[in-house]
Image (cartoon, rainbow over all chains, first blue to last red; front, side, top):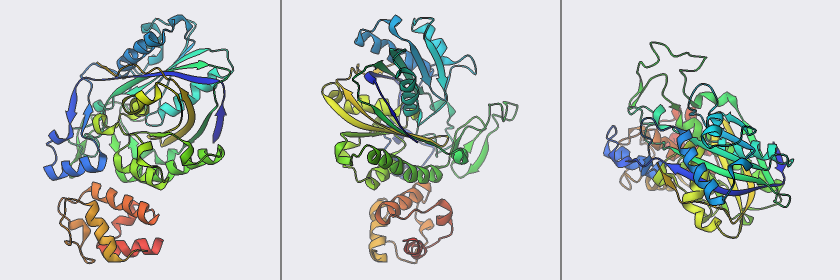
Length: 350
Length: 77
């Protein structure tokens, strides 16, 4: 579905990552040859891993504090805060409400969570912009991030070496003269088993067997609370849906690849993203990567890539970008938007 | 459509952990040293970008040799 949302400007983007760096070359569960091929195929040299006790909300909190400070926004001026993540603090209450209190926002603030992963940044932008575009809510904070590393099993080579942790904050404001954002979104629940944590929810409740490890195949051992990644299914889904989705945005806007300054893709892995890039015939200079240093940071990967790869460019002038998120659900979405002199504080390490 | 010799060359370039000219049409590609899911991804990506042909995991499971793989791509082209 294609949607145009008016009157919303992005003012700034900020990110926080854990201090602890883990290197793929040290992942000794697999052979050296496998490690080499893994680095070449996924592009992941290192990633940031949260220490026990650090939640996605902690990273988003730090990112938000810093961003509000640099924008010089009064906390009382924030009307809405949305937390998009699949690693919330608790089953309940919603983490966004905890963050309303922690950030010292007004009690009149709308606060709620959205449960999405790799497509979450685009869905979050869509939801918050839709809610703000009538002009009643003037300023909003979109907090997006995940701690994915606590769902992976060291003995599962198909997921363990891929994920990193990060949290972001994006500041949005109602602005009569802001250029429209154009969204194209999609969902396909028939592919839900491609990326899933099967246990611990209400379908398969936590029980005495939840933590029992099972050997799935050579190099893949995990339990019910670990994430399952079906690499080939994800690959095929991504290279089929994402180029189609981005092309539909371009054609709706009567634009070509040449009219877009940057395409910021969810950092799934290098081979997926390169295949998407080649299918769309986009020059490599327009497709930045943060995956080499930070891994696949799930919902946080798009804002993190903007921060680490484009901050100096986006902090001045006007730029037209397409952002695209895709993965767990299956769920996907792309947005074409324009930025103007964004505020991007220095990357925070927690 | 490229010939099977060119197809093999491209595969050898992508799998940079194997020696050049070590693959032939009758090679069972699963017997490549350290064969794993990453190699499968590399094949699917190569076929998709070079030939605009989508292969599923099930498609791959039905092939053994590089000749089988090549024939499958040709049949889907």
